[in-house]
Length: 145
Length: 195
Image (tube, rainbow over all chains, first blue to last red; front, side, top):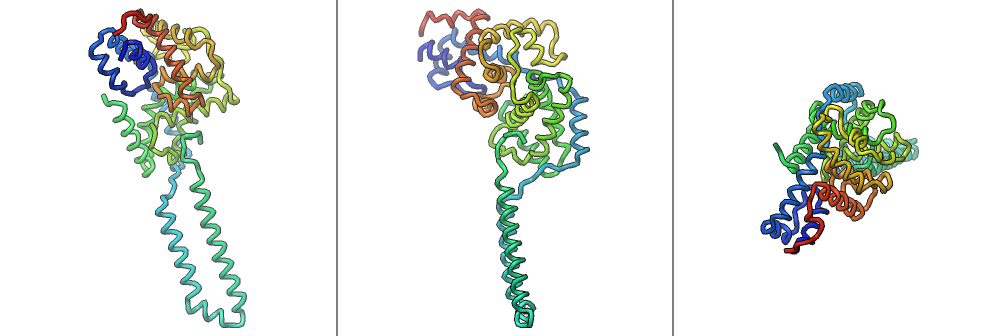
């Protein structure tokens, strides 16, 4: 690799990015390009704003978090949703198959009981699906909360 | 001293600890990144009197939305994005114009305790070169170049944060580095001997 190409790589290099193999090899042989690489690294470490920590500010942040007393949200895992849905479905089937339900169904108010239970099951299902959709729809990105 | 990747792993472990209910673990992250969040506030807010409130806001937002940090990128970049968005929201979605005085720009980026006289002189030379390279750029692009140098954020992280395309940012960083190195006397950049 020629000096000009290596210099261009050096001037464009990202933090923690490795040099292209040809450029790294060139640096081993060319003292001037190596000095430039060292100079870039040294210059940029002098520009970094890393401290000092303002402990009073840190304390006030932690005090505000404690005052809010609100634990960070934790999104339930997909597996949890699956198990929850499965339990809900089994529960619904069990209700409809239960002797009590069959007994009520055979009685005078059978049609109304059937309607009430079916409505409750439908509301439960829709609610569960809506909760799932709302929770999963939250962006998994670093955008500002 | 730990390297960058080790620090990133430590941050992810700390985040997991906080999410498991250890609220006090969050203090480690505040201790580590308060200077950087304060620096973003000093550079971007119009009213400096609200700096403490800004820093608190940024960390409280990060804490309450910690589950949204996927762990795929760096915690530092995620936090800086919250800081950046919080700052521009406070400024009614605008970035202050870049100060043309390198000394003023330097005062904005570094806390008073970081500005010992000898360090100021040494850094002033560097800031003069950077200001020369970014003087004519629009506010958000100039700030992107500054973020690269001062907070050591990577190209894709800054691109996601400010919306500046990676290649545009790269070419301005190249220009700034070239001016910096020329000011430091690197004749290499004048292009003579080729190997």
